[in-house]
Every structure is written in structure tokens, then in C-alpha cells.
Length: 588
Image (cartoon, rainbow, N blue to C red; front, side, top):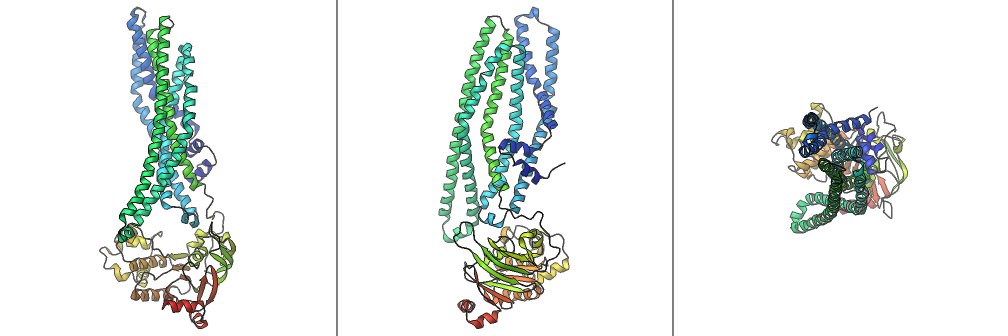
């Protein structure tokens, strides 16, 4: 039974060895490898027959009277046919190898992307996006490259090695003992450099990830650097990361160069020794001059094969390090587990917090401390407080991005831990504080993740959120490309697009994180009126610094250092002259 890419990846990473993981990721039947070996033998048979044909030609020149010319002609014809067969055989082999490598690359990229979607928001908050990009791009590429090199160079070396040893053992066993001396030497060379190459590849990979992370940061901070006139400072910091990569890359290249040159010198000395030994055999009459050329060629095949295998060591080291790097994502336990949990048939929107506490990893005190709260379905609840009071953390808990360190959250009476949150969130809409737009049309940004929608409903949402105030001024209306992160729009326009994106889903629960922070007073009044109409019958959760935007909230909750210190209606809290009243007075 065929397995999905995710199942294949999970099963592959059950192995510890990177090469075993790679073999499981490729996941081909035994007959595929057997057929590939046969095709590869056909592909290279012309080279082997050519060596034998040349040897027999040399012998025929030295002793023409004893030459079997019909046999020689037949051997020459067979060699020509075998050489011609290289075209279809090589094409078949490369196409199949490419199919394996490209499929592996696709499966890994999709698998890593899927796992990134499954990992908790807490994981992403603690991970640098540049490092994750490097894993998704560079490490997948290095793994696919290792598969390609092992399939081509590794297969070539292995089969060539087998032919050289097999033919020599069958025709001239005396030479075989000399051939076997190369094995221990090659193993000793590989072991002496393996540790250094592995360590350097690990350091180099980490430096590349760090540089990639810095690239993302530098691009994000370009406007700020330009505004403060510190472009050279930002460039200097990036230059230092590039210099580290350059320095570590040179050290890695130096080790690889010493390793490869050491192998080359060692093998050339062996080749010279075999030539001298063969010369002695010819002098004693144990072989013909043609045999000397033939076995010297066989030994050259042997050395070339061993050298190919040794040269694969840096490729394997890079690929193995990339497999381990991908494993940091693919094997991360910090998942949002939804498999096997209940999908809600419907969502009413009642949320209850029971002694909820949350502490960030490595923090010495909780960000949310024993909060008890009931948000009734269809009600509007606002959270206010000073910066750092825990508002954003509480929002993350309410929508399941974060999970309580203690206590529990009930959604329509069911513990959040028992619910498939992916299904529950399909009934939720979020307007985050940092508006996220992509380089596409205005329509695509509003309908993000949705299929076709009713045009009348789309027009109504555009009107209610006052996107209609500026859409007609755009060159192509809803089809206008708004640029990366909405570069062509103002802050207020971006905010209204985000609200339209939320409302188009007709959600049961709406979460608004500073919904009017980027709006001017007039736009704020328009959006506030739209919100009052659209939040009717829906559970609405608002985080706000502008206290004027929450006057119509059913309940206002005041947070301080993660604790819920006050709650009530807007007017009730003002009348108490407590913490909320002080916040209100300070904001005026």
C-alpha cells in the first residue's frame, strides 16, 4: 500500500543512520535497484569491452601468427554495439535517478512545510524564520544532491569496482592480492578525515543558517535603518556574518582538498607499484604485454572507483548534516496535536477559563496567573492593561496557539485538549496587531484561504469595513496587486482589509487585536459602526489600547502582570474609580 509523504518521512526518521534515513525516504522496491544495476552494467559495458579489445589488439601486433582474427573482429563488433547501447541505457538510468532525487526533494519540502504548519506557535516564536528557510531550501537541496551523487557516482564506483575485481580474479588471480591492498588504505584515509569533515560541515551549516536569518532581519529592518541613517551599521553586522560563513567555508574546503589530494597521491603510488609488478610478470612470461595494459586499466578502474567513493565522503557529510538539520523540524515534539480529536459539529462561542496559568519556557514567573473567566456566546469581551500585562498571551491561549501550563480552557463546555483546534478555528476570525498581507490582488488578500464566495456578500463586507472608500480609486479595483506586505497601501487601508478578511468568513468568534490602532478618527468611526453591526450574535474578543473602541463591550477585563484584577461593563468600571478608571484617565 502506498504511503503518504508524511508517513514515509515519519517512518524514515525512525532510523538513526542518515544513510538509512535516505534509503527509506527514497522508498523504492528491490526490483527497481536490480533493474538500475542491470541498466548501469549495460551502460558501462562498452568501456570494459574496449579495454579487453585494446589488450587483444596489442597482443596481435606482437604475435600476429597466434592471433584469432575472427574472434578479434567479433570482440571489436561487440564493443561497438555495447558503446552504442550507452545512449538508451544512460538516458534511462539518469531519468530514473532524477525521478528519485526530484521526488525526494518534493516530498521533503512538502513534509517540512506540513510540519511547520503543525508545529505550535510557541515553537515558531522561539525559532528564527531565516533558519527555518535555510532548512526548507538549502538542507532539502543538499539531501537531494546526496541522493543523486550516491545514485550516480556511488553506483558507478561500486559496479566498476566489482567488475575490475571479478575479471581480475577470473583471469589473473596473482594480481588480485595487490588489488586488495588498496581497501585498508582507503578505509584508513576515510576514517582519519571523517571526524574533521563532519564537524566542519556542522559548523558551516550553522553559520549559513545564521547568515540566512540575518538576511531576513536586514530586509525587514531596511526602512528603520534608512530612517535612522544607520545603513552602514546594519551592513557591517551582515558583513560579519558573511565573513564567518566565508571563513568556515574556506576551512571546510581546505580539509576536503587535503583529503582528496592525499587520496590521489596514495593511489598514484599504488598505480606505479602495480605497473612495476606487472612489468615483472611480463618479463617472467606470466602474462602478455596486452595483459599488462589490461590489468593496469583494471587497476585504474579500481582506483577511480575507490577515489569516487572517497570523494563522496564530503557529499555524504553535507547531506547527512542536512538530514539531521531537517530532523530538528521533522522530529520536533512541539506539535499541536489534533489527530484523533473531536471536530465540533457546530460552534456557539462560549469560552470558559478555569484557573488558567501560562509560563513561557525559561521564564521565572507566569505570563498568565490563575485566570478564571467565562465569556458567554454572542458577548463582546475586551481586555485592557498596560504593556506586558498579558493581553496578547491570553489571546494566544484563547485561540489555542498556546496551551495552558496549568488549568484548562473549555470551548462550548468541552476541554480544549479534547478538540481538533483546526476544525474549531474554521469558525474563528482573527485580526492581528501586525497586519499580514501578501503580494497578490486585493481580492486574493481578502479571500485568503477561501474558495469562491458570493459576490453580494463580498460587496457587503467591503462596504461594512469601508474598504469601498478606497477600492474604487485603485487602478484595477479588487484585482489591483497591492505589493509585498501591502506596500502600496496606507496603514488604515491595511487594517480595513484585515477586517474584511475576518468578516468575509462569517465567523462565530472574532478576535480583534488592536483593531483600530492604524485608523484615523473618521475611519475608526466607520469601522466601529461596522463592528457593532457585525458582532451581533457572535462572540467577540477585543484587545485594545484605545479605550474608546471598547465602550460598547459587554465586559471589560483589566489585566495586570498576568492577573485579572478587575472586570465589568465600561461604565461600571469607570464608576468604581479603580485600575480601569486610572487607565482611562491616563489615556485622555
